[in-house]
Length: 297
Image 1 (cartoon, rainbow, N blue to C red):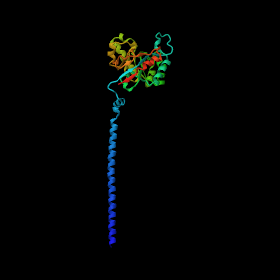
Image 2: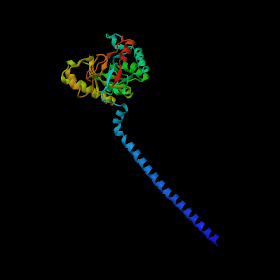
Image 3: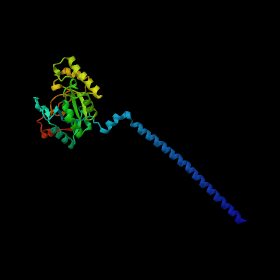
Image 4: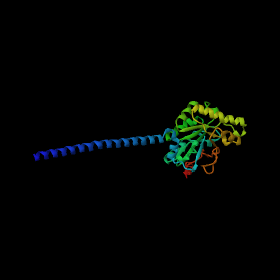
């Protein structure tokens, strides 16, 4: 009888033990499940926070952060001025304006192989993006640019800024609207204004200068669909009236000569100096200008 009672007592303990274990397992399951839900919820909230922080609307601030825009930078930038890229200058009297295509290719090859960054003129206020900036500019730009210079820019993947005389468009030996559109769409060339008629601005009235600046800008923008923000003075001639007008329509103005651009010296964006890349310029001279390129903080 005693043995039977003892057995029943042991059985009760086993059953109680088994029930307690089951209860612990069930309780643990619910506790763990609750914790996991909280973690997932927190993770989702954190993820949403990150996505909302870097939105498309904040792209400019993200871009600035990427490049770590400093409070002040100093830079020297060689800005080369070209005219005609052509082997034979024919009867044209100013032979120095005709650079041989093989000379331009030699220069572009050196730029490409030595880590220089070709920039557009309208990037002169964004030099923090570059280490060794250099600008290539082409004035007048007859069809020779399209035939001889444009293919080389594409070959070496280098950028340039060209200045167009808008009354010449579609004329004899000049660029057509279709060619200008093709050049602009390439992503390698910015098309800017060289006035309507390429006449001396400093000999014009206020109204005449206003027409040159505004109508050339409007014509080019209608052709390319891109903003025109740089004005190049024909033969480098301008006066105070010129400056008063273009400051309402353009962000930059280019002189004809003046040497290497130095941001600490050339503080007026409407009087930007350039280097004349003429037919007689040797590669060593070209390189000596390039070696002055730098951006420092």
